Image (cartoon, rainbow, N blue to C red):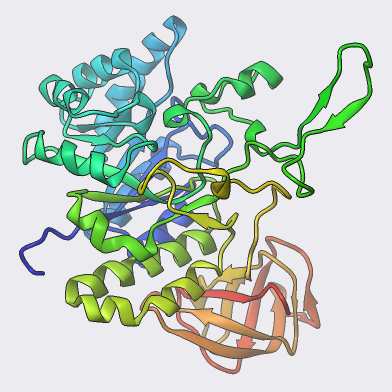
Length: 412
């Protein structure tokens, strides 16, 4: 076991708050977006000042930071992109993530000190494509979502040993080839390949017959519904051994639009699974029930293994709904403990005095605690906390620590 290379755990961060959480809960590296040229325009994203702070925090914990600049650029983007890459080089992340060959040339020229990683959007489906990017100067290529583990293993055998392979192992799946989609642009004018996807693959569809305008005929798979493009989420928590055997260097979690609870839950679960497997395969198998119970305590759309073990079938789609499932509700993250031993949080969802909630700790431990008292920032005692983003002080029966997350069962 020890001669195998332990893969990097790469975790998304859509904001500075979530970056701090990812670092605390087990990420080896995080990927973030700046305020331009990334494919998550609706995420909070990072100003250059926030990037500097985030990089400083991450590097202090031995965690790398990669910045996405993976749009497909138009002519009018290029001058601004050149300036952006110069500034990015001064900020000092560990790598920049690129899809477009023109953007690659601009990055190589204007921030030559940064590693360049090639995004999954670039349709990286064979080892000659990997070699091409290596010869151009890329350090790492992200595998296309539509590759099997057998294909990735073959790529590994046919590229330089120092070249790195990054692959998605958890999160939402796109129906389109390598994530490149035109539906959003066609329906709404918002270009998925420029960061503005409206997720039309999750919409409900019907058919209208030409001679009967306005009469909608349902598109159904049996009686289950009309969400014909709605794929299940990817989850490879049961297949760490196969991912390692395939020679993947970086295991990537999808989700730069997700909450701190999602990031903490997924990062902590995969961190333990990877570490357990490298301790012993028996340890890894023994903890499988815990991995499964934990991974469901964040939002998901049922799970599949994507393309890794063959092409998906109808069983990889969800036909009766487009909503997420969640078995836990995020209440907030402990910012500090005051002199009274009270926990300061920014409240995310409603809870009440007397509720039994759970403390989620970075080391994998979960502690049950009761909400004894709630106080607002002016010292007024409260019976409940119904208003999101309110700063609250909580007296809990079991005392948490700064950085712990608070959650409760969605069934409560």
